[in-house]
Amino acid sequence: MIFLEHHNGKVTTNDGNKKSLVALLYEWAKKDPKAEFVVHAAGLDPTEFTEAIKNKRGKNSLISSATALHPDFGYVEDTPFIKVNPAVTYPTWKKSTTCFYIHAALVNQVCDSFSNTDNLLYWLNSVAKTVRPQGVFCYQLPLYFSEEKLTTTQVYRFVKQHYKRRWTLILLLCHLIYERRFPLFAFAKAQFSKKREAIFDIGILQETPAFFANVDPIYEVIIPTMGRPDYLHDVLNDFSNQNCLPKRIIIIEQNEDPDSQTDLSFLGHQEWPFQIVHQFIYQTGACHARNLAIAMTTAPWVMFFDDDARFNEDTFERIFSAIRDTNAKVLNTAYLQGSDRENQKTYKQWESFGSGCSMVHRDVFTKCSFDRALEHGYGEDSDYGMQIRNAGYDVIYAPQIQIKHLKAPVGGFRKPVKMPWVNEPLSPRPSPQIMYYRLKNTTVEQLRGYKLILGIKLFPHIGSKNPLRHIKIFKKAWALSLQYARGL
Image 1 (cartoon, rainbow, N blue to C red):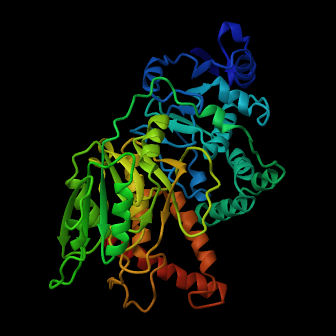
Image 2: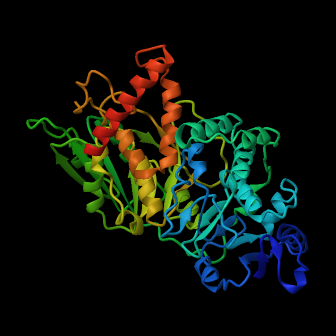
């Protein structure tokens, strides 16, 4: 491992001759494509950082110490990678130059797309922002928190280079509306910046590091179900044909009718190559059902699954192979409907979480639970994903493994439920459960950016084509949503 010390982007070690740190990285990476670099600020002892990354190192890893970078990115990016928990290892493209790790193989992949620069902070974050969606695993460690941040002019340039052009206008409007400032020069100057892209072979980088431990394929499956016996029977038959069989399948059957009886009598009429635990309850709700099932598990791995999916006999064999490849504690497969096609070919850090296609390790699900405030609504999957990240884990997407989601037209959990706000003369916007999720899991700037975009999208659909009257109505609908969300 090669250690490079810098001050304001200039190398301070004797053999660096005060070169640009980026230039030296390019030079040394070409000389030794197997090298691993730890770059740190002058005077910092990187021992603690080096110890912390030992199980995350690799060609497709880009890891740094902690930084907020700049709050304004929340105005233009609505992903889990903005509100970083500084107390845990967190998946995000936001990077600090106080201390970071990068492999020579990654440097060599991006050097032709990113010119040499003395601005190490901009270069590092630009690289991370560009390569993370293509499959490079990017993390912040809870070490050496830095106050370093981009200037307003650099933020506008960054937005222009890494997002669609219209987001620079959204950023300008957010600054004007919410902060009463008008950085017109920064906005105008950014328009001359070219969009930044890096096309490279991620497959070369995604090689399984030798230190990744073997994984015992011992797992249980939890399936909430309601009114879909035929679909569930097909799911169980698919599990019976797996090369890698589950230890147990836990089925939570729901029906709110107190006089109802099970629809799953076939469970006892057929021999299964695994144990089935079946519980019939008179309470509906996917959050409650999943939490109940999780509490019954004993295996090190649990598969969150739906009752209307179909899959090949090697699916779970491939899931555990992917877990070994990525050292993941949470793995989501592709979950395709109808004629859907998945263009992503390699592993990536996922922006979401799917409770119908996820393998989760016990270390994770003992610290997380489905939020009952989101019962009978939407957002419980995304919220669970945020709990995972805030607990110090990551959600890895394996697009090569594909499960078919039939989206059965009967049964399921989206039965109409009368919410407290249904009788309001003005519908709350957004729905209070979506607002609840956003209050819980996004930054102030992300909430403000979302509010602006939603207000624009709803014009003139909530009662008026007059812009001023539309704004007045929308503010009332937003306030109503806030009121009910806080009650949840």
